Image 1 (cartoon, rainbow, N blue to C red):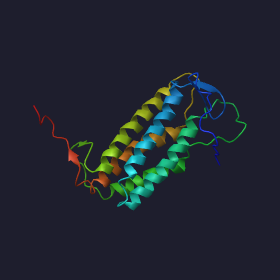
Image 2 (image 1 turned 180 degrees about the vertical axis):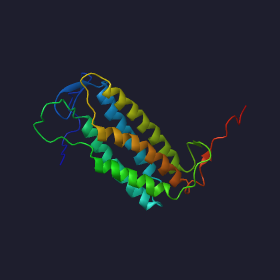
Image 3 (image 1 turned 30 degrees about the horizontal axis):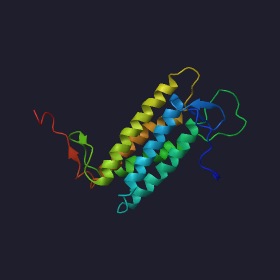
Length: 192
């Protein structure tokens, strides 16, 4: 269990932060950017949950996602160095990916097939979920960039999870928009 008695440590005053495994990185390091963006997506989901009280199944799914995102942040903040770890690091598991896929299928089953792209919006919950989706996509881009950086490893389950996350948030937004009936559809060339 994590126990924080003091919130400020002053160790980051020099523009660095400590990873879970101990080494310090610059606060603009790609790995720090990636897990910071996961935290940002988690916060956007928290805002969406202010509007999901009438959707208990969706709210429970979002709470599970929020917990998973802390796991994903811990995964990213504990780089795999290729060396045997001195402790068992927290990593995203395939079971978490499977659960998100199951939740996508559950929510999507009640939705009409799309006939147009959707503009982000509709209900307050859906608007926040669309924002969280775009933040999750940015986190995914950062994680992909991290995998292309020499010496940096991101586990396959973590990559799968972040990819499914944005899919889940899209379907969740449609679900929050009265099962898609309140979706705002894109009209190509409408304002020409």
